[in-house]
Picture: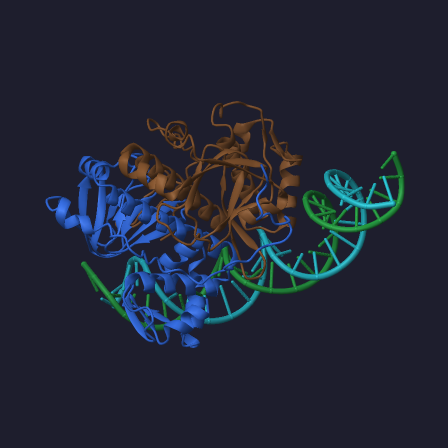
Length: 240
Length: 240
DNA sequence: CGACCAGTTGAAACTGCTCAAGTAAGGTGG
DNA sequence: CCACCTTACTTGAGCAGTTTCAACTGGTCG
């Protein structure tokens, strides 16, 4: 059997789409997970959670899965020294929970007053087993979350403070308004303190502050009082 | 007021299992994905790939999914400045590919001479749709990969060079020999150069070298010529 | 009003990076 | 088999960006 033709001498790096811009997770063809809410989880429990409330803590064994209708949340891990790493954000329309029942590897806390749907593991499993399209949609979400994690890992490892902040803002702006990402000027609600940004980018609050001041001075982006204003979205993406 | 390390202002952070040690992904009850190889993909194409060969490049549209029988591989992204971020490693017994057909967000290159099974998307989809247990096993793998990404994100963001290298070695040692992780002394084949470790931990080769020298001097771990020797595995975990 | 928290700014310290040079190891062709 | 070439690894010294520490501002809420 021959070895593959794609062999590349170990020292030669191949650049296909090097360091691509942040990818929108446009899932062409493929329903959103929340499409099943109305049809299959119509009677599931709706819950309201206040800003700062925890949906669950790290290590919790949860027998429910969730869908976000309104409000933002964050997934985070606590570190021994009291700091925390924000792993990802949860936005409206997105699912949350574990297909394999297990102690939660992270905690989830609301950034907003939020409204969610809690689905029992049993109901979830039933639908998962009976509707392959649903199972597939869940996989798509898991893959997208993995891609975001990879993106952020790269960001944290290799980019400057300014760029890390830029990319986070750009990513969230795009996720928050999936419609018109081509628009020049945008303004989105973004309920994040500088501390949240610091914990998500693995920077210190002071460093985030300096980066935001710089972005503000450059006229690239302004984040104040829970809302983000970007005069030229493309300019923001380019300065990432 | 003085800043106490564990102070928990009412609505804010709660520390449940702070900064837990690296978690083995023991999936209690739940079959491994490769359990389906013999029964359903018996006739799928087996391929051998040489060390350094690419399974696919970043941006490739692949119509196959893969299972690793033998050999290690790495998933990585290339950056504009010629550096690369290794996102994850693929070990024997693990699946690789995308449930949602899409341009690959990373490249995959062999670290070893490897043997893999290539399954057509169609065959995969058929099984995914007809066997919920298989779909569930795939989800478990995706969740485990996500957890590893989160772990590494945290590592890169918050830990010192020495600890990052430690944790990577510990994680890989555990994944490579899923049986006896309690053993005191272990020796595993680990086909990684210092460059690989550097690219996985977002450190420079020189820094990795210094860290490895230090670990060697401390008698914690020795990585040389593609194999890792650890006199006391628990000591390694504790120095993470 | 005073307490408190988020945000801001400055100056010094530290970790990992850069650059530079050198050694050991592995593979190839004579 | 050795000579040579290339890659992997090692070590040192100075530099740079982020962190740390400390102080101050401004808004919010009791």
